[in-house]
Amino acid sequence: IGDTLEIKISNNASTGSKLNNHAVLLGGCLPVIPVTIHLGLHLVGGVNVILSLIESSDTSEILFLNLCILVSLIQHNPMTTIEMEDKEALGYLFLADILKQKREFLNSRITNKLLELVGMNIESLEDIGSKFVISNLSAMEHLICDFTLWCDGKIELELQQLLFDRLLQFIVNNDMREFNLIRFRQLSMMQKLLYLLQDHYIHDELVPLVVKLIKTLLEFDKDGKYCLEV
Image (cartoon, rainbow, N blue to C red):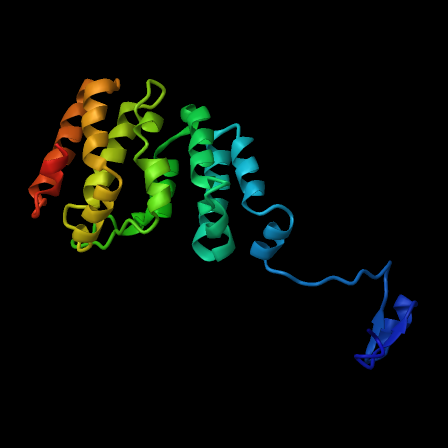
């Protein structure tokens, strides 16, 4: 390396500090190939490494931080997206199963982070005419619209209310409403909501929000497809 850079290498630190174009070698030398964090993770196991970290989370804060890593990887690294959506690996389904085991750690920060993964920009929630779009259908199906994850006795009522409020925001005052309605139909949202009211335990205080979401879906159902589902 020294010859290539035309630098004289000295083993004497005192001499090296006095001469120009000199470098001092302290310790051994190890050649490395620089890679991005995304590629580095891919080389040592890919998304399974992060899923293992999430599975080992033992507090809400650690769970949130590990989810932040996963969301960042999915949003900025195509390899991670492919791994999560692989039909054999079933990354999102596996993540949902992990979260079901850690319901007691779920809170509003974690819920909003999962919604960010789906396509909701939490920072612009108050904007009128927002453009929240369901861009990640697999994540929406397994992490948000799997109500067996959220409608459980371990989940606080306030968190359940937050979830259904967010679902409404994909439709109400949203410039991407029509696209999101198509996504909801692909997810059989109407059947999921009716099934939730009929067969799953939910807080009595949550029923009005679920009914409101059903009414909203029907209100914007211009072609009558939701009515056919009912």
